[in-house]
Length: 493
Image (cartoon, rainbow, N blue to C red):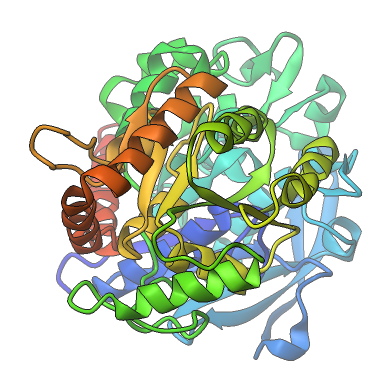
């Protein structure tokens, strides 16, 4: 490819190696799509203790690498190399001091106290590896607060470096609520110079803010949907970063995440009871019957099922949904299937629902990938009552599986679900704006009444939804445009 770019991803998570959320899915999918476009893409990850070397084919690339930190401190590590699906090289930074422990960011939900050192070291180690291996990337693409400081190190430490001086940086923000804010006592170790510790760059009310530093120093910024980009510029969803994002102007763009349809396609999904396509939905009927049996619901194809697969976290609105489910079951002939875990009080509440509504509600507390696929395939609707949702993936899976989304109109949910129009039957789902139990129950009622009273609309929406495509190819091309913009800005400066 004539305009092939050399791109280095630096991240704290990547499927299938380490995952706590959607960040890992993006880092595990976007590089493959960029590789398919002809670019030289590589990934740097920590070699966490949870990564099983026996399941990987690794080679020792560098036995002993010196990483210089602030205050003249030196850290020593090794570098192993493997591959993501035999296509994309993955470099694992091995430091037992920083990564030889359970968990990625915490253990038993208690954050590691040395997280600022751990992830500042990761940023520095990724760049040092480029120098030692004489790999000269055009772009370093970093993700969220754990690797945001890579952009700062590139500008402050490597402005005259023969390997890295021409490298531009792109920061993708997957969730603005997590910014990496730490005590200023760690700043000396980070080593970015006290002249940069002020409110315009790395300082945040007397503390260090990793994400804020990345927002200032990166050559370009992205987030994971166009609506979330606007929300973070102009509302409280910017979590204090609104003015800094607005100051970046056209350097900040929203690009939708994609779906890996190798894993999420009802025509080929090996985890569901029967495969199906839009042309032949008999397999979906079988999936619905098996879902009803598995969750001990009344087996009846004429009763609509609303599915839920979610973390029980404040962002996700599951506290509001719990109240809405009671309202819905009081007035509607409908079933609910819930899969999730997290907040212990919510776990207990959802665990009780099947005994309160036998045959009408099924729940599984925990995560089970097979059950998640069964819900996507067997439910008629899929609900996401998120307070905010930077992109969201489950609504994209639901569209592909002909399971119409019911979503709050925020972030990527607003961008990917087209509102049902009762007059024409157009749309691919049901959206509402005010997030409260009444609004959720009313929208569930709207969806359920469509299933019963305007079933021809439901079937047409189902066909339309299954034809929507959110693969990574188009998003990858948009990222390439951002990379070129970042490189142009770097050259101008």
